[in-house]
Image (cartoon, rainbow, N blue to C red):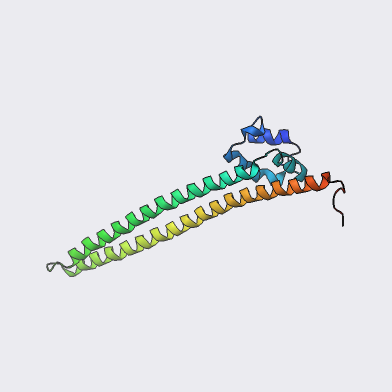
Length: 170
């Protein structure tokens, strides 16, 4: 959808005033920017006198959430690895019993191998999770930076248009 004016954008964001723009809605606003005319987007961003601070707060919030997620994930992964080690230790002690037959030994060895496969699978899932989490952080930070660039760019354009010499020409 192409947004023609501020009113359409406010309606899409579900706000009555730009003062009601929360951090979540700033991210939504950033995602909507490609569907706005440059003039409309710059006009809106110029209305935020502390936009840089707001964008930095958004980046800080994203970073804190990411660190919390990574920390919780690290603890969870350590717990999973300890559990698999405990299982293998129990299986090893069973394997060391003298009264086991060949079929029982084979079965225990297969269980040990299965714990290795399961642990490898969990590790692969964790790496995918971390990759996805990193991508989300990069998108959030990139959005905040893009909004900051748009804000600075809009101010530079506005200032060059307001100068006595007028806008720069090639």
